[in-house]
Length: 245
Image 1 (cartoon, helix red, strand yellow):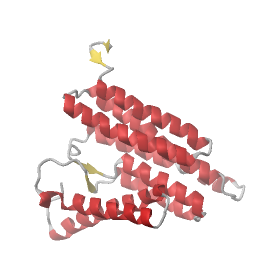
Image 2 (cartoon, rainbow, N blue to C red):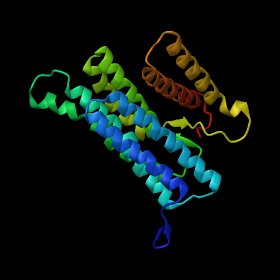
Image 3 (cartoon, rainbow, N blue to C red):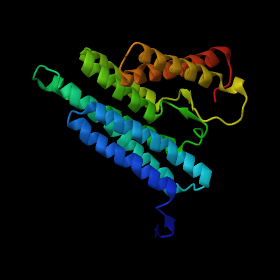
Image 4 (cartoon, one colour):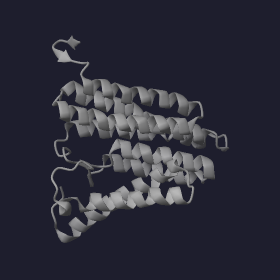
C-alpha cells in the first residue's frame, strides 16, 4: 500500500509496528500493576526494534518513513512504557499529601519527555550512524524497567528513584559518546569496550542464574556498566587528548 508514492507496509515497517504494539500493551499492563508483564512487553519490543533494522539492512529497504516510524514506536515502547511502570509503583508508595510532594509522583514522565528529545536529536544527528551521543532510549528504558521491579520487590527508598530520573534524563541528551553493539569488520582492538561489556554482562547473567536472582533485576546493573564504561572511555580520551568518535 502506498500513500503519495510512499511505501508504508514494507517488511521492516511491519516489524516496527509490532514494536509499537508491544509498547501499547505494555503500558496497559503497567498502569494495571502488572509490571513484570509490562517488562516482558518491553523486551519483546526491543527484539522487534532490533529485527526491523536487521530486516532493513538485509532487504536494503531503507526509507524515511521507516526511520520516523521507528522513532514513534520507540517513543511508546522505550519512552512512555518505563515511565508508566515507575509511575504505578511510585504512586502506590505512601507519601505526605501536599502538593509539592505529590508532583514528584509524576516525575517519571520526565523520562518520556527526554526520550522524545533524544529520539528527535537522533533523527537529525548524522554523527550517530555507527555510535551514539548520549544514552540510547532502549538502554534507558531497560534500566528503569529493571529498577522499577527492584524498587517494588525490595522497597527501596523513593529518593533513589527521584535522583536517578534527572540523572538519566541528562544522559539521554548529553554529548557523551556511547558505543553501539553493531559490529563492522573483525578488528578486535576497535571493539575492545564492546567485548568487555559483553563478557561482564554474560558474567552478571550467570551470577543471577547461580544465585537464583530474578532475571529482570540484572538489566539495571548491566546498563549501569554500559554507562560507566562509556563515561570512563570518554574521560580517558579527554585526559589523553585522544579523538572522540
